[in-house]
Image 1: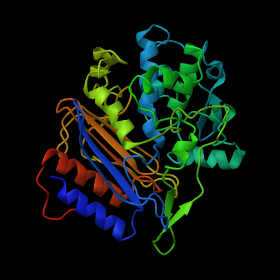
Image 2 (image 1 turned 45 degrees about the horizontal axis):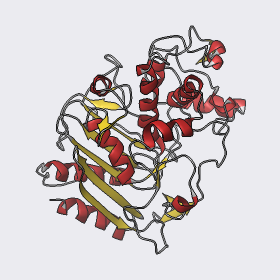
Image 3 (image 1 turned 90 degrees about the vertical axis):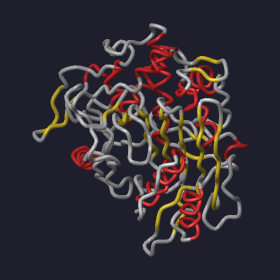
Length: 385
């Protein structure tokens, strides 16, 4: 059933386009398919396998969004209430305009943080913000609270841009729960769902199984780069800090497929999970990136002809995809070319993990489409690009 995908993955490895990758397909009842190819790091002997640990980057966002929604269900956070009591940094936010900085009209709500309508961006998603960071000397990647106090691109609720909002949502989770984010996730999501290989800081046993992050060198060959999230940051990156395995993340997706429950353990209400497929961004298109930093991300717009939106945890595809995914599916990825989807209507989910920068690599995206086609038994086009 997955012959075409496996052939494509093997070819990408043998051609030196990726070091390796791990794929998983699951339904509500369990894992339907697992496959690995290649090595964990170019030039190394350790093979990719089900135990390989990946930096999943922005796949962290869905997990932290679920944490925030748990607290909404418990009445400890609200989606549309004022957050300044919990996050006092929001009292004096500024908006970056062509004329300079001006005070923001209001602070963002949790709903706006989760849906990327808060005005917070990344330097790699906004040329204006990237230029301001360079001109001002602002430290945007320091793992500190100060590094998150960057200006907004618009007043909260007045646009959509992919950014650091869920890093701030992680801080709201900490303030509302009284727990550091790693402890909260471990107690309320990771341990209940039996995800032992998922966490912010690589435990010694995970470090030995962690795949290297690569870029393509000037001649097109792969080069492993030094990479690791800060070992003891002031602020845990709720938008990008987790490491995980395909098998662990598959359990998280199976929880979503089962309406918030997995193997008798409930982490989110069925009503909340059903709501995750509802677009929260109105008529604004969401779920794309116009890259301002080519070394970080390519332009990324998987469905330019579809009115994709963003829900409270993920991008939402309101129509069926050509590869087979149904309407209302949840999906996103991580900077080092890790991707997932969950299709509640069909009860099917998929994960593809590699470790390659920049994001939105065309060849890895072609592999993701191939995995999806084979997962749904969708006929292949005559030519696959």
